[in-house]
Figure 1 (cartoon, one colour):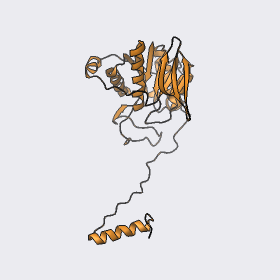
Figure 2 (tube, rainbow, N blue to C red):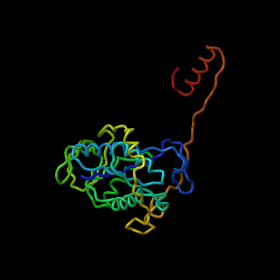
Figure 3 (tube, helix red, strand yellow):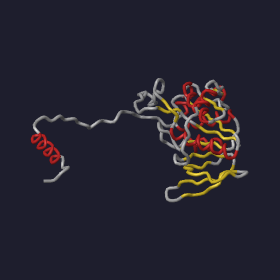
Figure 4 (tube, rainbow, N blue to C red):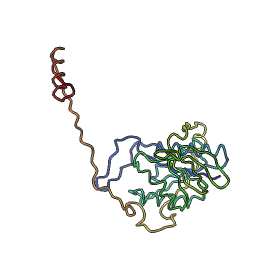
Length: 264
């Protein structure tokens, strides 16, 4: 069984600068990490490999430094990986990202199961996985919270619905987006990290895509645009009080009463 896990490098902090013109995060130089939700997808793939055999590959889209999350995946047990990177892919919304990923996956190979985290911490749209499945023309199951079993021609999973749990079977090849409670992600192995720190990674650029229409990638291929982005206005006010204990108590009581936190 060939398993592919889509992973992403996301900012490791909420203090990230934003390009005011494009509304795109300035990722260069910012602290980064693997998207936490993708760790659960990777663990799911590794568990399937351990139980049913096969290989686990990883793929990511981003700037050249995004390859660090591929090496992290290698240290956890992934077998090989690919990086999709090109300036022409920059500034992509979910549609352009999904198109680029689907093109990269076609270049990388054929897989029985493609796994994605439910969403990313920098976008929170939860749309890329289903859109990739649509562009690859494969079945998709979202919100998977449990793997029931793998059969010869498909996989049976439990899907978390708003009011109940639905058990469904997806035929191979298929794409699943998994919940964060499906498995506890394992820690990276130091020995595997040493063994794989120089492992070759396949790198795909725009010239490797089957679809060579530049208007479908990056900002050009993004129908949704950020109109305005700005930091939230802080309404926190600090006030320093001085006086005796009785005076301070009276002032605090008066302030609480004025703001109607207490009656009397």
